[in-house]
Amino acid sequence: MAAEMETPADFATHEVFNQPPPLEDVNLFTGDRALQEAVEREGAGHARASLAKFGAVTGSAEAIDLGRQANSYLPVLKSFDRFGHRADRVEFHPSYHALMSLSVEQGLHGSPWDYLKEGLDASPKPGAVVARLAGTYMMTQVEAGHGCPITMTNAAVPALLFQPSLAKEWVPRILSREYDEGFAPAGEKTGVTFGMGMTEKQGGTDVRANTTEAHPVSGGGPGEEYRITGHKWFFSAPMCDAFLVLAQVPSANGKGGGISCFLMPRFLPDGSVNAIRIQRLKEKVGNKSNASSEVEFQAASGWLIGEEGRGVRNIIEMATYTRLDCAVATAGMMRQAVSQAVHHCSYRTVFQKKLIDQPLMANVLADLALETEAATALSFRVARSFDRAHEDEAEAAFRRIMTPVAKYWVCKRAPNLAYEAMECLGGNGYVEEGIAGRIYREMPVNAIWEGSGNVMCLDVLRALAREPQALEIVFAELDRARGASAAYDGALEALKDAFTDMGSLEARSRQIVEQMAKVAAGAILLQHAPSFVSDGYCQTRLGRDWGDVYGTLPAGADVRAIVERARVAG
Image (tube, rainbow, N blue to C red; front, side, top):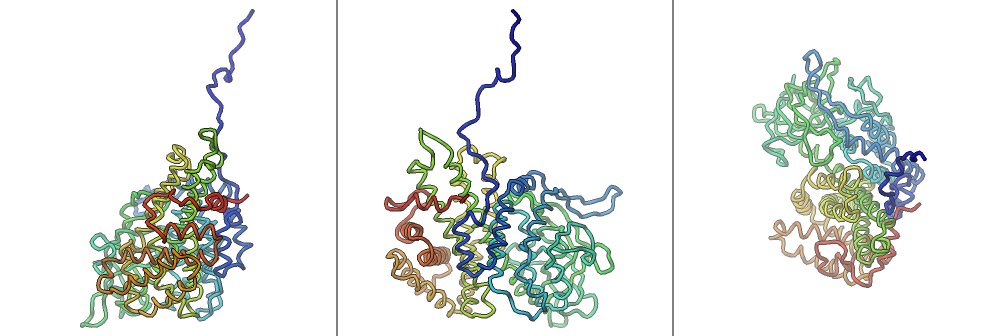
C-alpha cells in the first residue's frame, strides 16, 4: 500500500485565534462621539456632512496603509543630479504625495482663509477654523508627519497678510485645493505649500541670536527683495514652494535693521532655482515621513514681510496657528491610541475573560479615555476663539492666554498616554507593523516644536503682563461651571489664589499653567459632557492627588460607560 502524500496542512503547528481584526474601514467622525459634540458645540455644525465624508476616507484601510507606507519608505535627499549639478531636492514615496493630496483636497492646508478669495478685506466665515481642525484631528490619526507642511501652509497666511503685495500673489495659490508635487516655479503649479525656517545652531528658541543676514538689493523696505546668507538648523519640509524665514538686517546709519521676516521662494521670478542648499535631512526619533532638514542660504533671495526689525512679531502670528495645530493634532493621536487599545481589549481574551471585562484593564482604558476627551474638549474650545477673535475682544484675549496653555498641557500628557495605550496591546503594540509604536514616537515632537514647555509657560506670563484683564476674562468663563462639582470649585479657587503671589510666578509657572489647563477642561466637561465623564475627570484631575499612572479611577466611577463612549462606533 503506497504511503499517503504529506500536505502543507500536515505541518501546520497552530491556527491563529484570539487576535483582534484590524481597526479599519471605520468612520473617524461619525464613530467619535466626543469629536462630533465638540464640532457642534464650537460652531462648525455646518461642516458635519463634509467631515463625515472625510471621516470615512481617513478611517479606510487604504488611507491607514498609506500612513504605514509613508513611514516605511522615508524621504531621500538628492543633493546632486547624475551629472554633478546641484539638485537640492527630496524624493518622497508616492504614499506621502497621496496623503498630501487627501489633506489639500479637504482644505486642511488653508480652508479657513477661503474668504480671502473675495478680497483681502473680506470677513472670516463662522466655524471655519474648528471645521478645518476637525479634519486635522482625523487625518493625524492616520499619519502625522505630512501634517507639518499642511500646518505651516495654513499658518503662513496670517503672516503674509502683514505684506499685502506678497499676499495678493501667494494667498490665491495657497487656497487651491489641488496638490502639486512638481518641482517648478509657483506660477506654473496648480497649488503651493509653505515651510518655515527660524532656528539656528547657536540659538534654537532664542531666534534673536540668529546670525543669518539679509541685505537689500536696492533701497530695501516692506515687500522688497533682499539677499540672505546664513543657515537654518531646522528647516522643515524643504520641498515646499516657499518659506517664511528670519534673518538679521544690519542697521543703516543707526536706523532700521534687526530680526526681520522674509518670504523665500524655491524658484526666483526668472525661473531659476533659489540658492537654498540642503545640507542633510534630520534623523529624527519620530515624524519620519516629514523631511526636516538643515540648510544654508548662499545669497538666496527673500522678500521682506512688513517692516525691518518686526520679524519676530510677524512670524509669531504663524507660530500661534501652528501651536493650536500641535494641541489638536496631539489630541487626535491620543484618540487613535485609545481607540486601538479599546478595540484590542474588546477582542482579546485573557484568563477566560475579555480584557475589556477585566476590572483593572477597564479602569486603565477609562482613565485614558477621560484624558483624551478632556484634551479634545480644551483644544476645540481654543479653536473656537480663533474663529471669533476678529469680532470679540474677549475671545481674542482667551486665545492669547489659552493657546499656549492648551499646547503645553495636551502635548505634555500625550507621550505617557501613548505608552500606556501601547501597553494595553502587549507585545502587539511594540512592533512596527501596527500604529501604536509610530504614535508613541510621534508624541514628543509637538511638545518640542513651535515652542517647548517652558516657552509656553513664559508666553502665558508675558501675555498676562501685557493684558492683565485677560486673566479676568478667562476666570469669568471658568466661573460659569461653578456649583456642579466640589472638586472643581476647590480647584478654581486654588488657581485664583496662585496668582496672588506675583513675585514667584515664573518659578511656579509650570504648576500654574497645568492647573489652568485642567480647570479649563473640567469646566467644559461639566457643562457639556455626560456626568460620568465630568465627574470622573474632576474627581481625579482636580479633587485629589491623582498619581502619575493611569488606571486609578475611584471605585464610584462609571468605568463601563466611559469606555463605551470612547469606543469607535460602527
